[in-house]
Image (cartoon, rainbow, N blue to C red):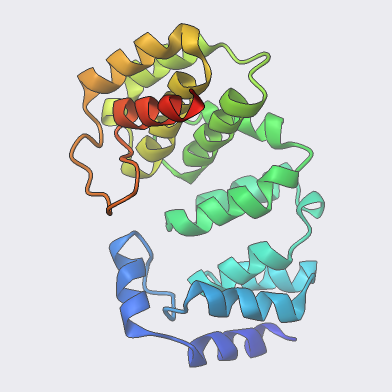
Length: 222
């Protein structure tokens, strides 16, 4: 399948409601508004095609980039390529797929985590850096200086860009959930900052407000 053929298929599946939803959450105009199930179906037909994936990413089209991360070979992307990809995208949903489907299997993800954590609190590399740090906090905390992370969260999260604040908040919650010795401080920071305190959630879902999130997950551990 060629780039043009994939784009043609995606365009034929476009939906105004999906396009409007994507726009609301940060997507630009270069999109068709295709449902996730249809995107996955196209990727499943292609299976793995690294060069096609790179070409699809270069189009800048939202749906093409979703397909791209599903068909590329993570280990064939260099650290510089991944940084350039992160810098080139503004839609958090695409960035989160890049994290889930590419970075989780990348041999340089720790190097990238450290590099992206040093980029400040704006831009998608910073979002990815905090996302990777959240994963380390919850699954492989050895070597992670959690008190220093809490210091950064306390100082930087209030003024962080929205796309970065979200994954910083995840890191705060993961500290409180997984590290009892730091739970009280994590709860105190969350309460004082109040980030996502009034975030609307659907019935049955857990609030992203860190104190509620922490307490809910800890209660499930008992």
